[in-house]
Image (tube, rainbow, N blue to C red; front, side, top):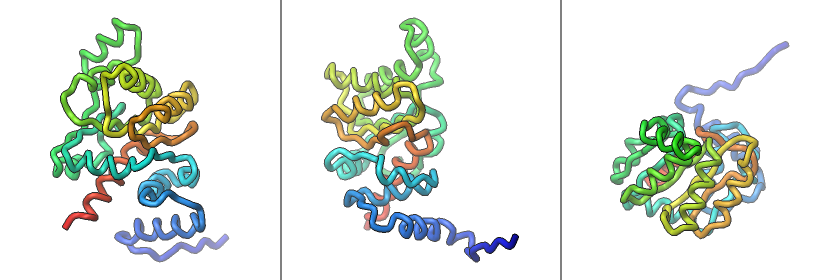
Length: 213
């Protein structure tokens, strides 16, 4: 069997990948202003379902970009997502990335209250006096807790990226976030992951940097 490979230079691989994604999307309708985010999620996962299952609240991208430019910080539910976010780009606007999942106080409170560390870490984040964007790619319990904190008037996130992957309460937790007045980017259904959470954050940062003078 003869296999023919494309002759693509290393520095051209990403550009060629996006050309292929654009070609294969064809006439698939995308919300204006969200195209780069959708394409980067597809690039990260090779899954074209993100063209249909990514849901954006009204002006979510615009509001997120403004929040980042005004120094918003990002809270994630995994060290993997934290590692994947471009911290140097975020720092240009005064923001930092946090993940409290490994913190001893979070573990102790979770054990005491009989909850998950993800739940406890959202409580810790809510106590911060900062503008916050939440990037949740693993724990639906984090989304459930964010919903509760929002309903109780204890938290007003600048944006929630709700893309946990899995089966137990994943779909339901995403629907809860979509039932709030908080700006959101949600991968409806079971798909997602820490890599997708980081990817969306980086897409937002890339969009800002590309508009810089």
